[in-house]
Image: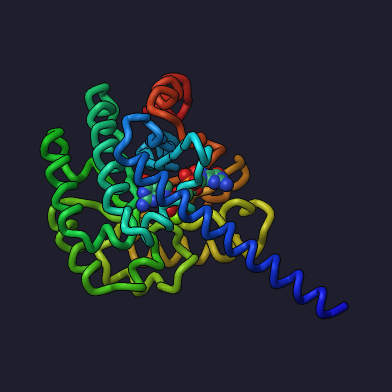
Length: 282
Ligand code: C2E
Ligand code: MG
Ligand code: MG
Ligand code: MG
């Protein structure tokens, strides 16, 4: 009986591995194609961030979307990781930069003053070619680096500090602003961040989603907020899904909120009508 059991476990395990391998392979193949095709498979959506002091939009986070005819919707968490491993992230980020900066120029032309926040992955912060491209894209559009925020994940920085930090310092000197994303999920402390040219931290949504009901999350968030205050860091809470959480964050002195309670990420067209109808509009 046990033999049969362990045998079927083996078969099952092998099948799972094959599934994973096949999926990874089709994502790699399809993504390569999407990056050069004219099918508009890739797009950017924008999620508003609200300044809790003014209760108005201050920024938009740019998030990539991928709809593929074979694979359907592929979540960014999944394909970004695979792109990093398959050597495709430079191409993905190039595409994101081009689209985001062109959208940012459009928003500015329409008279909106909010900044746009773009996500970078570890390899991007070490890629001089990509960072030079970023600067020239902004220049071409007549935009200053202050119009853009760059979000980098906490764990990425800790993993490969030296070169990343050198590049962060250089870009900061040029006027770029960095935010630490998913704060609380890595191993760094706020004291460590003090040595980095970082002005903003984004508390990971895992601590915010149940904030109104979870006392552990409340402890964590309160601690992060008071330490951030000591170190003069701006705090964004992502994953705000209800009014109760927003009220708590406001009361505790959080600076900025982002989440489904305000708005889901929106296409450019949907964003324009949202901006015209929301009480959070500029
Ligand atoms: P992130 O940068 O931490 O982005 C926030 C994620 O939280 C987004 O997921 C957003 O849709 C989601 N979110 C926002 N508010 C709420 C909420 O109230 N409730 C819940 N449950 N979720 C909320 P998304 O768009 O699926 O992106 C996932 C991750 O993929 C991002 O996490 C980021 O790490 C990565 N990513 C997305 N776009 C890009 C990109 O253009 N470049 C790079 N390098 N990474 C990207
Ligand atoms: Mg982000
Ligand atoms: Mg995050
Ligand atoms: Mg993330």
